[in-house]
Length: 98
Image (cartoon, one colour):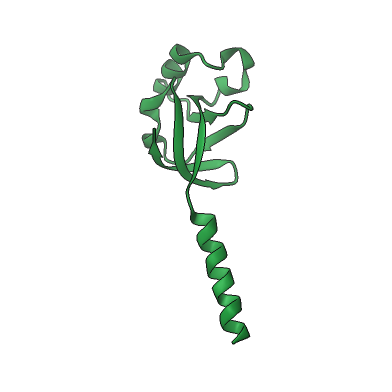
């Protein structure tokens, strides 16, 4: 019985980690995300992402999240969006973008 309960808690914990969360921020390129003066520069974000720099999400508090599945976000370069996805470390796997 104790073993069954322990297994149930482990499974519930893993399921909770896989649940989606929402992240709101500005989609910009990874290189420029390190420069405070570039925050919110939509033209630069579009140009740099189109040029091959990976897209990242920069939140209002300055947190920079990498994006695992780039194809889900590159069309939103230079936009403020809300991403629903799962977080592992500092990388979001995008499920949807609003």
